[in-house]
Image (tube, rainbow, N blue to C red; front, side, top):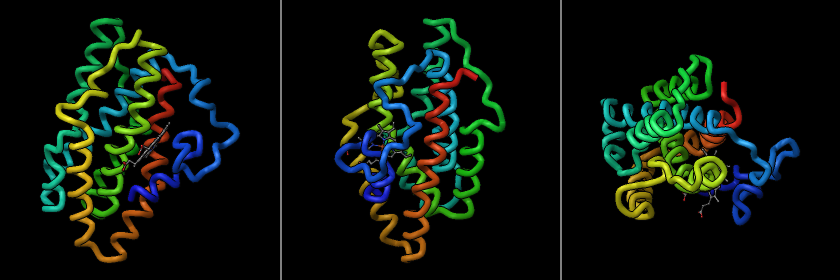
Length: 210
Ligand code: HEM
């Protein structure tokens, strides 16, 4: 899964492993002009995605999801605190999530896949949590410098050593995938492109305050 995901990065995003040329219309990170409202909106949208993931692994009956409960990577509670922090310190209210927003559409898709196609759901699960630990943290650092006077949000803080949490989940993902047929493995790998598409759309809310 990691190999496929890395190839879908642009060379600018991940210079060592990225396989795609950076599209001409993409702004280099150095030229990003985010706003605090846009960043808050991105956090609100992200919270819906993480809440959906976390509800699925907690509530779905399928045994496959049990291994992914309480991994320590959960982000929805942290995001809730961050959203409250924006209200307290900056007087910014979170915007309602529109039903046609990127996160709402992603949430619907995740719920559907969780029931109908667990290997595809697992691909989204991996990409979401691992992307946040890599590129997500790079974005967070940049936003913190540009917009928040260096404040580190809870979204970017984990209890315990992040690398150990990630490796424990990676081991469980590998064990889970070992039980899959070749077709199921392929479904999971092929889903990576969609994970990039939806996460990319949620990421773009950084630049819109709608
Ligand atoms: C601005 C956008 C992004 C940047 C700058 C970025 C950057 C990076 C970098 C530098 C790594 C390598 C980390 C390492 O191993 O040292 C990485 C890993 C990764 N990224 Fe991204 N990324 C971005 C967007 C995304 C998106 C949209 C996804 C998919 C949802 C994604 C999924 C992943 C995954 C799955 C890994 C591998 C983590 C692992 O298994 O260790 N990234 N990213």
